[in-house]
Length: 129
Image 1 (tube, rainbow, N blue to C red):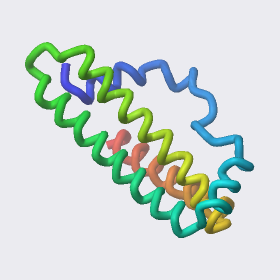
Image 2 (image 1 turned 45 degrees about the horizontal axis):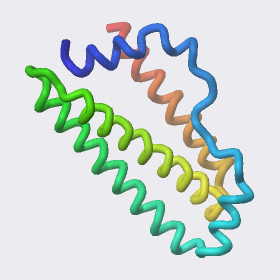
Image 3 (image 1 turned 180 degrees about the vertical axis):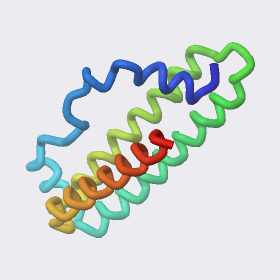
Image 4 (image 1 turned 120 degrees about the vertical axis):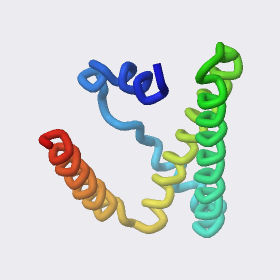
């Protein structure tokens, strides 16, 4: 079973079980961080965290590719998965702070809605052929 098939297997039936996307509810702490460390510093931290997520994803992807035809080390697999998960959390936190810094939550939501709708149209168009 290739990686795409594994992902599809995990997703199968899981969509109905999903709630809201991960978010941050403690806005006061995030605002305090922006006030204490400054918007420019928190923007730089956001860039660093996105880079760390990129690195974690690439390491995980490389490991999956290398172990495609052999037994994967369970401890290594768990460690890489946990690292991706942790870096995703860091990026989500920093994205919320960026929305606070730029004061653009409504605009971001509008773009998300339109981009997801565009993706939906693309998917429906490709499955109807």
